[in-house]
Length: 240
Image (cartoon, rainbow, N blue to C red; front, side, top):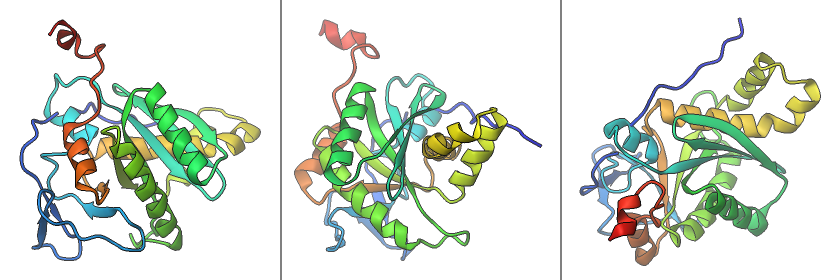
């Protein structure tokens, strides 16, 4: 049977102190305000969040505060030659585009699109096997996410990793349900896979995501402050 699922309505929380847990040691925590040990090979540090009180993803903000405004999310499905993008504004998620770029050109284009679409976070799909283990492609995705995180943090934007196992197959099923032709499916699969990544992220209210942090403390401080607030969502600030 062909069925389309919609993610539940989600809701912001007020930032307060946060600790990040090391996924290898359940009882070990590392405070963002204290030392952060990194991976020399990949540069920026990626840690699973046990608490999202200080730098919460938008999905968690929506769940905890029904009056929260702003905060759009860009879903990213990184491939070897193509990158699919999806956009979440409000409670809707839609496929955006597919980029045929790599390296620095891809990273700069992602930032341009984020600026245009008023995005303040990137949700990047992390490849995993059916048993939850990371794959060789996972390291490549982490590397791209790390470089992007440094550039994004300059603007106060955040980068998160979300398990993307099975999203490509789900994307194909979704497009068939929507009646897309075979040729259309071949060119849009990556974008619809990014849609699935975003829907999965929102359905779980951001639980299970990993935030990618730059090493530089000044960039971490910019993440705490966040990006510039859009006056369309906060008109009262224009009057100050």
